[in-house]
Image (cartoon, rainbow, N blue to C red; front, side, top):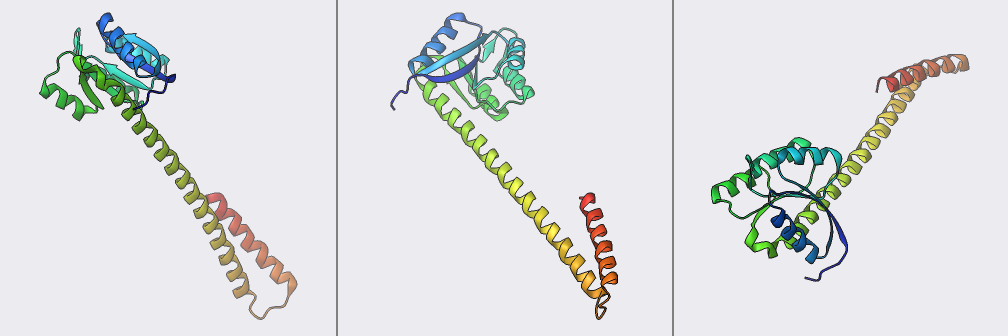
Length: 196
């Protein structure tokens, strides 16, 4: 895979080891990303960072002082942001990894296999882009459907008014009576339109 230099990546890294944080950042930069990294050491720091900045991805160690990646994942879910959540840990048991994936983690990697990190980040960013594109298309479709329903409703009211006027004027050639019926029907149409 060709490395495209300079791709911007806003990274929130939850890692208690400064050395591991540097290794992770280095691996991502080596993969061609221009990383703007916010490094915090726990879920509380993560919560503050999520309130003050926007991120493209969150990477969390599993074993943190007083907490785990499940706590940081929970913090991300509480913030209600659609960003991938990766666990990069020195040690994570199979049960903990499965529990994290079931709770919504995008993926997990071991720290001794960081060569997988950039491809996983790229995959997750692509999936986020696809979800956003899908939501935009869905919103556009909903807007078009709402507009079509509005136009159809207006036309139905016009046809109903015309039908009532035609039925009421059957055989009547009195222009004043026709105008009066038309005005009454138009008022009903406007009142019904206001009710929508």
